[in-house]
Image 1 (cartoon, rainbow, N blue to C red):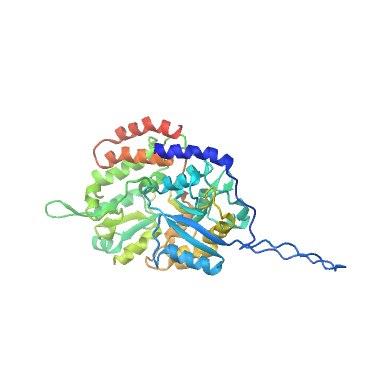
Image 2: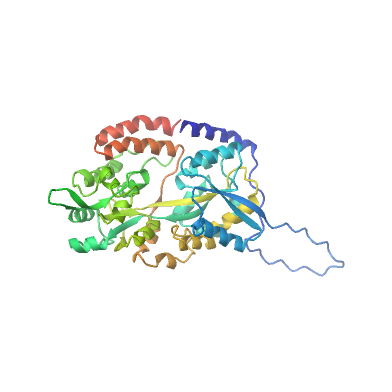
Length: 441
């Protein structure tokens, strides 16, 4: 992390010496009709025509590219519409991806476009590592983007990214398990108390008392518990990103509720028990050993492939109704060489065509209100509507200065709590001792 911080500090200098993005490009935005020209006495000189953006753009991503991968389909669709621009994917493993991207921005071979996770947006934007896209973004487009997503791609009043895809969280539940236990399916009015009661009824043990089925499983990384923290009225940090909220009564309530599900009521597997079914946080649900799991829309394809009899319901409501919104992004790194062609790519992937394609490919939900959600809502599962409805009250996952270091520290200290090895008070005290230096370096 200290190495990342050192690289990031160089970006302050970079922002002063690297020029910003070029002028507005001609395509693909429609142009207004030309005004009528009065008759001329002699033929006027033709106005110079600006050449359309062309050439090769290097697009950096942590995804692999295969014949049927989403990235390949996006490349094919884009190049079919803009044959003068070639997309060349530059793949980098997810482990060390941001290190490599930052190093290239400082003094390496800068990609023209890069994939960026939402939680990395502010650390990159505030240090001058991204090109502002205001010259390529219209007011109509900004009005079309879901408010939670627009907030995610905006920094200091300017747009610095377009959505790759977005998703809220909803509750996946195993219908067969609910039917067998005689438990009603989740409904729009159910609360944490209703959820706890269902979890207990859906948990089973064998004759020796060993758990063989659990009501619920949750991932303990920051994104995996954030819905419950929001529902309790809590958060990770204050809006300015300078003060930790982990010890607030609201956040504590959510952490204690989830911990009790695992250890007091024993209706959620421990990390060791969950690991028996695979390395993914969704593995216990996919294996048919857990009745409920919170996740994004992209999980549905895997559950369908596993042959589960499942559906989607609303998240249980705590103090308030809430769901986290997480958006993966496309950005133009500072120093990109073919900015005009890169802007055309960003307009495509972030616009109606690209967002409809991302939705069709199962990457997530389209981030634009104008894109018909009908293909996304096509079963299975039946009730995907809950992912769409969550955008009415959902909130973006937080991104702030040094968020990577803060979340790594937070997870490290809370892991002992989730594993049942120390109390919440002890974990929070350790977080409170380290947070000020991280959040206010």
